[in-house]
Image 1 (cartoon, rainbow, N blue to C red):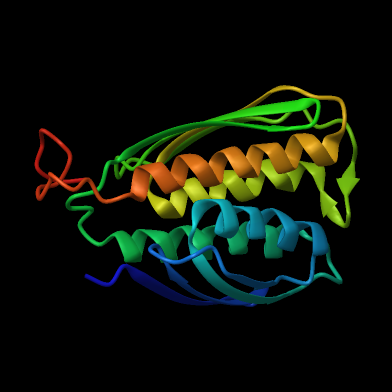
Image 2 (image 1 turned 120 degrees about the vertical axis):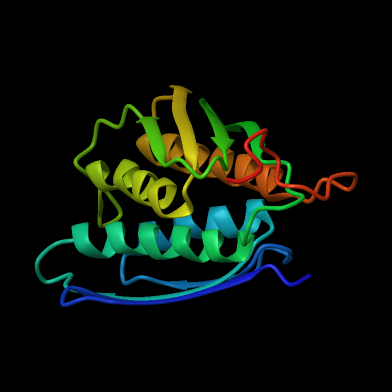
Length: 195
């Protein structure tokens, strides 16, 4: 069974193409025009063991908001498409990830009900060309389009780069666990029979 997702998102503000394979090796080819966003999304691919090819062109002459948001939406939609009816998946994923002095926790439920509770505690205005406020916004956009409940918290840390990167590593690990095929399960993991 192929678990590939493809999205071509075009608006007046952005053009984004995503192709991914949930059962990949973590290969990432990401070009958003925002270096730190590329870095964070590469963490999702690499540590989630998801092959991701994402190319984005956005109105960066305005600011980074539209590009960051739409990359989250396009990536989330591609994951949602790759999951199909979500039959046989584990559904839930939990992970902690440290990066030096920082520690992040992610909890994912591929419930079909989008919700994101994100607390990163970033103090800087921007990290490498990405507005700090948009780091969490990417995660919220991802959760919405992925149709997932997601809780992501940075529990401690002093360096904002470390805090953000630890958060995305934890997110990747939790998603990896949630999308994994449960070898014994052949049904949709819900008492409702649908996600």
